[in-house]
Length: 471
Image (tube, rainbow, N blue to C red; front, side):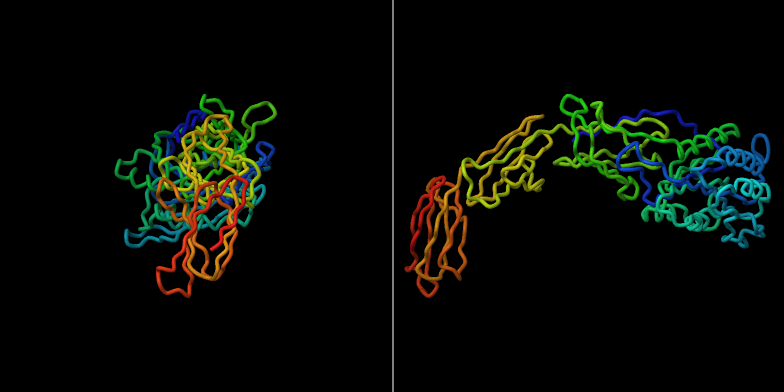
């Protein structure tokens, strides 16, 4: 089916000191499944700060370490008293100096300030104490950072990694990032770098979304944007469109998957609210989504990027009509099923019971009724119509054999025989519900060892009638 997505977007600034990565740990966070009534969970932010010797490098108005310390401290101050936030600080490359390229400590990372309430002063104090010394160990630091969050099922865990260089310890940040994403520990990170070569930039594409940076002012702006994305409420409206492009379809389940890991993030049953509009949902804006609308057949919208703090609209083409299956007159079937396939395809979309009505995406379908004999139809499902398929009332045939043996029933049509049923060799009588038509019973007793003892009998089944077939 056609896929549509429309986001009401804001602008995004992509400049910052050194390299700035954002990763999100997601312990299955979600708002209430009832939409905007859900309560936002506690957001825990872990700052992973670069204390390697390269941070002494001069950048615009001063050393990079000084600028990063000051701006990060200002950010910590700005969110210190929010009751829905907890913070922590991990630093790397700050404890052991680099003696030579061969002699560098590639495990030099430490959680300096763990998560707790009202710890902003401790974080700012520790930031001021950081003296760049060592090397850049991104992969190992990320591995350790994943364990810094105490257990909490209702918390949102966010990692903000600040560094001015690439991996120097033979670690593989891409492999670490991908492994953690596959496990559902983090989302695909954002990577922001300052004036790096094209070759180095490509190394970060596998870690996350890459952005370039140039100056101190933009660093400050980006910090604000990141926090805004992490904390602002983000609303989503899903428009399920009919053939006229109107959002009139509803009452169908929608699943939001993490685009990167494939993990299920949300399940909602689409609702038209009391104002006649698609209901508003609260969804975590961090990461990309794949949405599957569980119509028949399902409709998929890939690579959904939400704008944090905005009202996002996702549109999917889901025009539907109804298929009603019924048996004419009184039915002797205890249950009768019908296989539904898209026209010209062999894949089974659905098995629908008779005397039920189910919605399908508009289009042409092939139907195979599991009666005796099987009946096949083609039907067009039209928008907002109830499309009815009615089959004749069946009849009953009681088969009576003289002894156990080999017996089969054939439909006789256009001077051809079509095998529709084979009786068990262990029984001598059976009652079958058959569609109206002309049939032939062919039988040979089990104890007879010659084909000339084969017997046959022609019989007719009429709607609502019953007959005995004796051999």
